[in-house]
Image 1 (tube, helix red, strand yellow):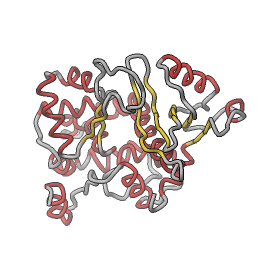
Image 2 (cartoon, rainbow, N blue to C red; image 1 turned 180 degrees about the horizontal axis):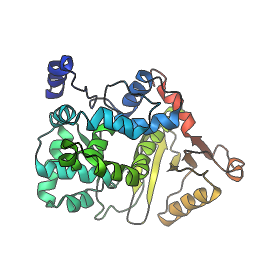
Image 3 (cartoon, rainbow, N blue to C red; image 1 turned 135 degrees about the horizontal axis):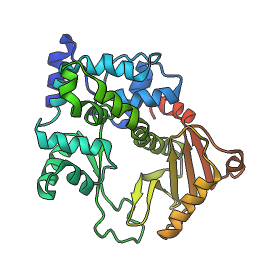
Image 4 (cartoon, one colour; image 1 turned 60 degrees about the horizontal axis):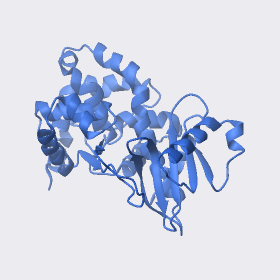
Length: 313
């Protein structure tokens, strides 16, 4: 029995939070939506970005930061113990985790922000991957593309949205939190949370794409892609060999045709011959873009996330 499950078993009756870090991002989303009876998937996504992977009943009718205060900040000691049980609680490790939480996940940038050497950083990352806290994605995710990797950095991702939020918005301000001062947390939340949400949106969009192609021409790989010139939120390949590239935009404005044009230009720059383009949007799409929808252009909004909650998916 791993340490996390031992901890959960021992402390459950004492009110300790139960962490679901062992589940995939899809299973964590399904659990969160079912446990909290999510019907508004825009709001559900925002709360999931904070509490996904934390097995607690959440009141989605309250302002998000008020729930953060009640569930996390005012219970800091208890939640801190549960999180620390997942990894070796050392200053350098915490610095690396915080750097991953708020950056783009590129390994070299993480080590620079955490002020740790590449050698020491790689050892800590290996431990965190082995412990199931983070995952590592290679810089050349789709082997069928004939593009040199060069010195591109791998990317690091948290297994759980909640643990990512903890190290991005809570752990760095523990001194003030212990004194009941939440001003620093609130300031970071107000300034960075919208940006923070985008990765969760991308990850769930990738899961939705897997579901939509769950047929004879299923997807054998769905990831993000980056090289020295461009970065793509989604790249996938179907069983028949069709190449899919996509963009995810979590903003309060509708996605316009210019987003498709930009995506096509990125592909041209890196010599990527896409067969299908997919766009994901928080607020939907312009009429001009919707008129272009076809077998080669698929459009999805956050409302489509409802289908992810179906059992067996």
